[in-house]
Length: 205
Image (cartoon, rainbow, N blue to C red; front, side, top):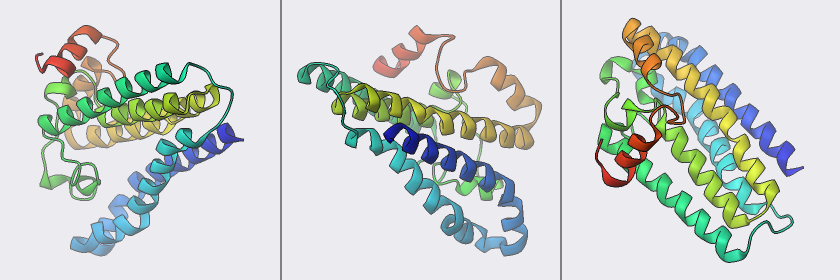
């Protein structure tokens, strides 16, 4: 049941992500300067609430203990530190959680520049990677296999939302973003993992 619940919520979040990209032009045409106000209440609040439900859900899942308590706790702390480091690099690269993260620039794209430097030179959607590590961290604190599988399920909306964002960004910058896609990973830095972790931990590219 916890896995089914996590899957259903993940699919709902994916659907909201699809709809908010599909309807944003209509909000701009209908509401003008007030477009984001309506967009926030109709899409961002349910989007954030449902995504945080996915994020915290593994922590409350019980099941047969997988690891010794201290091992689960240490792995969870390591993953949580990685989540924080990724978030620091996201801000350092110029992606602001209060503006970019709240999708203000999806409604008003002309108000910002596209962020592609530093950590974005390795992966296009590090925010979703940080959520993945954070969710895994909570699953290891819960310390059971069902919680860990549930945490992995939250990758579904990460991938779907990431691909939708790429499509939207291709619409903004065309060939430039298509070339950027060819050089970087969607979510996991599989092409240059050692350079990625060097940047992550030592702030050196």
